[in-house]
Length: 167
Image (cartoon, rainbow, N blue to C red; front, side):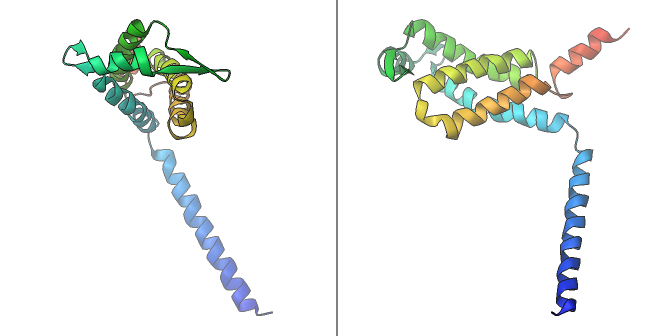
């Protein structure tokens, strides 16, 4: 057995491991508020964009109303059911998809905004069950992370908490 090749391979592996360790240690200097902010923005964008499609100026778009009244169905236990209270549902969805992402990005009432979007994600999952792995699971994971760890320091929630706690 050629020991020089064995030692060279081991040395290369050790060098690679040292580089990986040094890179990982560098992440400790990343402020936790940065990924928290990016999570809030990342999950807010698809909801915001969807909300924009539901409005025609300051009025609900006729297409959005038609979808909720005629197209969208809830898929429960192997059966499909019409959307309950479709006019109310479309108004709530359209307002929620505009207001909740704004609150999320600002970091104001962040955990409640994330909960609202998580509930919307559940309804969307029941309406479009085939999008679990591609859309709904990542949204749910991001929203649960925000609800669990909060908005971070780059948020109005944090600023307000500091202001109220100051003597």
